[in-house]
Image 1 (cartoon, one colour):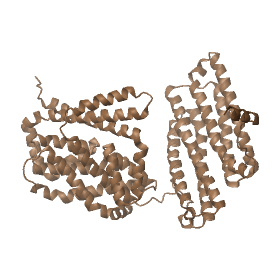
Image 2 (cartoon, helix red, strand yellow):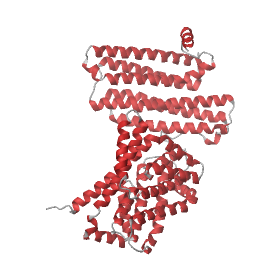
Image 3 (cartoon, helix red, strand yellow):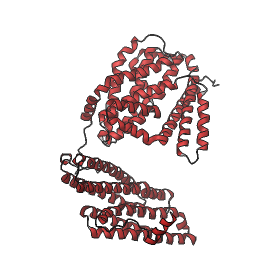
Image 4 (cartoon, one colour):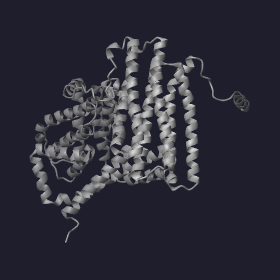
Length: 557
């Protein structure tokens, strides 16, 4: 008969407590992101100033997120987009590692009343926060903190039977005598759980029960820090080299620190405690920061050699015409930007063209292809914006400044079209496929007609962008008005069929109306290229209100 102290039940209790700890950590992370995600990204972005500011940005953000992995992914994304150098991103990571140590210290405090209080307050905030995204996010964060503290208490209780197990004593004794093995075991467990914080707190719980000596605890803490570098490295495995250098550099710094400290762990005497475990964790990360902050430039250059930029001409998201050597010659640089923006337009046009095939054939392969193209569109759009910011060193004549503004505005509109196609049109096509829906012939013909006209207008917009032709600009604005009329007429005809009780039209009504609306939105973004041309020609009115209506409004005011 199985007792309450059976190894299986003890293992389930420990794993359940760890799972609750990870779930609480996830709630805190998502709550903080939803409450102030934009501010956190700005704080990380402040790390472009100098190493000290970068370190403090990483430290502060990790205190909020309670996850150095989340900070690492944020810094990697910014580095990959050229918004932050690899060296500054590595300084952010050193701050993030120290931030995790502080979080571990705070969570290890024995404040039993705090867990139920946080759960109660967080649940109440979430319940009364209907309609307030901020309040519900704060509630989610407090619930997550409460769950983490509760999980740590459960973890301490679950390890009580472990202290009495001869087998566990033998296993931990073996790890104590083999610091290299202990390091590898802790590193593997941390990589598996995706949280060095959870593993350090687990080690602290075991140490608090008198199961580990200082040497074994130190080796396990070193392993937890080493394993914590693995999740960001795996998560960015498919990113551009610039984005992958940050997690690689973080791994190199942690590995170097852990291997340098490992020979000295056996010099630590006595039995470990939970408090000592947290201090070891904080001491290691503090020493790592002090050692490597002056060396982040060297580590960045090393990762640059290990992961050089790919010279892959087939990568659609890689700029082909943005020549950095001509930035001081605005006319030439603007021509380069125009060519690259036309490439961006070709990618977006291809996405829009394939959308109809996705709707017609339910081809999941095409859905994935469109999503991949949108990633390339986002990368190219960012590259164009950053290039335009640097043209002429910011000192441009009026005509060049005007053209730079128009190029940037059109690139932004093209990126918006790509988002509409990927996140709306293709998502609706995927939903249609998933639910096995079929458009009635009349509805699909209306969608097809509007799609064909939209695609033609996008091609016209690309021509206007290149030629700045006034006649084509007039034609495109007229087309925008015609599209609005066509969309309204198609929607009204569809609703008539719904009122007549046609089952197929009723089943696909939401999809049909959303597709028509989004195609009209694509047209509006494409037509934006015509407005600057019409404005220069004096053919753009300040308001679309009729004069009588405008007078009436002024009288009412």
